[in-house]
Amino acid sequence: MGARRWTSNWAWVMVFGANAPDSDSVARFLGREVLLEWHRHFTHALAFAPLMALATVVGVRFVLRRPVQWWGALGVALLGVVAHDLTDLLTYRGTRILLPFSDAYYALGIESFFDPVLYTLLGLAFGVPFLSNLVSGEIGARQASGRASACVVLVLIGAWWSTRYVLRQEAMGELASRVYLGEAPRRYDVYPSWQPLEFVALVEGRAFQKLTDLRLMRDFDAEGGQTYFRQVPSEAAGVALRKAGGTRTAQIFLAWARWPRSVVTRYDGETRWVVLMEELAVEKHLTRPRVIVKLDEQYRIQSEEYERAKNSLGL
Image (cartoon, rainbow, N blue to C red; front, top):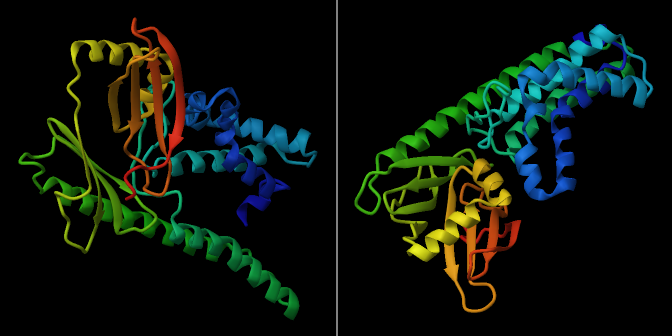
């Protein structure tokens, strides 16, 4: 392969380079809500890609103690880092790829983390050259470089992503063409599933949010799924909501969430107010991120907690 000519131990450099952006996951040890703030932050930005590549090569050379040719290794590591950054753009969450110039998330929203077709194609990219060289070694033939099979797999992956993009646009058009509770949607989106023809559909109207399944090639029921009517809080409940929204945990969560929903509940006792904030845009088999803030009668914060709860919709 071409990378072999750039540096020795190129495979180690490529593997660690492709995973280097996710080194921000160490923020988990400071708290799960801190991970929301720092995951896919500067380590995933193109401007910082050369720094991540350098850190990768230093790690391979001095931590793993494997020899490398520095300039070639930097090139291989940089390819791995950039490939990771660009792949994250395909997901629904996206990534802040333009930091430090923009803190916005950019996302195509076409790929699921559990896409079996993608993993099959990636498996072929590694498996076919391995089997080919194994057979060549047995019969004494010259080993192939694997370049042709890698190019074929890359073309297939590109075609697959293009197909998923077209399917997502089809699903978005389906949502836009419907009426929900007597009104056109103010906002709508689809969350990708591991099944390419299936999406989690999200719709927002003047006084509601709707979460439902959308399966292409089947009739779509605009009245199905789960409808959340927007709570109209009293003046006191509104104060509790604002106070809860001012906590650090809530601010981190709301900056990350794409489809947040808030509910204020009043109780009798030492804990007077409980404010729940949860993210609706989650694949149906995953837990749902949420923040729970408790306040006393004087709206003093008693606790603030980030957790992941089971998807209560059962979709």
